[in-house]
Image 1 (tube, one colour):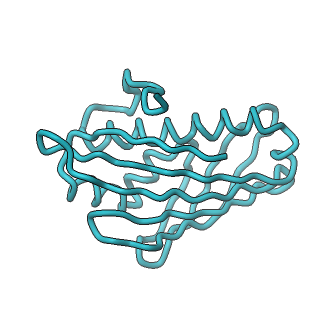
Image 2: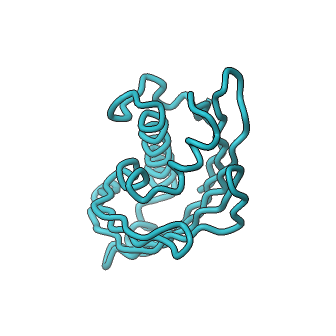
Length: 161
């Protein structure tokens, strides 16, 4: 599954970059995240609970940052194992650019794969779920950085357009 999108965040690039590298911010923004520890230099360990169609699982995995260009871009990669449910792995290339009025445009290209029972659900269900997860993460991230509340923004899936 691949997803390419962007969103404009009403904050300067340094603020957005700091949030992208904060375990606390990432934990709050990742849907279903129960625990996220670590740091950008050594990587993060995560526990995420999700339900994909009829399959409910708790994924434990590692997240690493690579190709880091401070205040500009990085690649975030992760893999989680969900026991009998299978596994999920993926990466996102994240890039920041200055936008009008001191805002920052965040571009992201996501590539995700699943295996095990999850893969048996069919690509349409998996792709829809992955798109929903990415949208929820970036909506929550934008709301957190802009200080607008719980991440339930009215933009919804406007990032897909």
